[in-house]
Length: 266
Length: 283
Image (tube, rainbow over all chains, first blue to last red; front, side, top):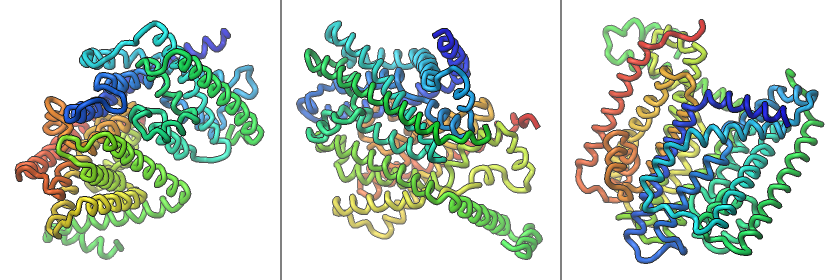
């Protein structure tokens, strides 16, 4: 354990270099967020009643909480770095050292998220404070605990999916396109663009058979109190199932990849 | 351009005002030829990037489709008008990608590695070379898919634009493109001041994300900033309003043109200021 704590320390020092970048990223991210919120405000102004069960306050809160979940869980450079490590033969050193590459990458991911969240905290807090009239707080302690658990698992799931995608570098030279294709799909299916339950019901249901809603939509739904009681614990169990499944897949792909790995230039 | 025409154009440069233009057109043709050759070296990658872009375009259209399944209009904009808007935004963005994007994002790399030294030494305008070095052919293909969506939306709206209207639309798109390019070039030139500038591309995507939104959705400070300071909201909205007869006054056209000229001027001034600061890397 000691060595992995050390890796997190190194990771924090390395990512601190990018703090200005992270800050710019958090700040620029507020532009489309503001635009989306204004867009919904205009829509609500011209209509009576809510949209698919969402009041204006809930809709705006949805996007604000997505921003928080995103800050806590999104992968930044991790997938590119893994792909580069494989392509350039850097992973050779992990094959001979008593360090597990997956655990190593997870430490770096954790360090990256810690720094990003710390840097993004100020601009996002100010932004949410300016919209405090539209920001709903969790209904009870259960919602808050469920949200925290779910975000932690969403982070694991997000990391494992990106990790596995990057491992495709064992077989293809240029994984960037595949990563972007997955990212585009995830953007919609995870609920970044809009709450998934404003989609036609058949689509929403179909999406719930994929892991994507558990990346963003599910944690946010818990926060907003739209999932509670038995459904909450059931959802958390399914999410845990997806985490385990993606972990198994990541290990499997890694083992297959290492067999094929030829340490080019390593 | 073959050597004889080159020497001719150089000789007559003083006498003929058009000679520099011809020289630069010749140079640009050579850059194009280079880019085509390079792109064809990675055919499967080239096709995959087109898939990626199409997917993002479909995503934007889906977003609007879902919103319009819950509302009749956003401000004054109806569904198919917004589809036309999203199509036009994609069109302008893809032409921008084809001509400028890679070049702008590579500027920070040229600065970091000191490669800019060689470009500064060449006897041509450095901004010209930096901005137009590479052409991304995939952008033109993606622009084609945007045109298809625009035509479809125009038919749904029963629009029958006159030739003059279409010409006007294209001219306004070109002016919008100038704003687009000037702002991105400005962003890229920041890498003269901070070397680690990968955040720029990210900033760019966030900024231009709002270009495809109907201006009627916005008000107050947000609208003022993105109209008069960073005029992203004009880039696509004004051309589409011309096409759909939504323009409230010719002043909107004048504003687009004025802001484009202002953006270009500011970007040129900032570029010159930044170049003065350039001390080359390591070499």
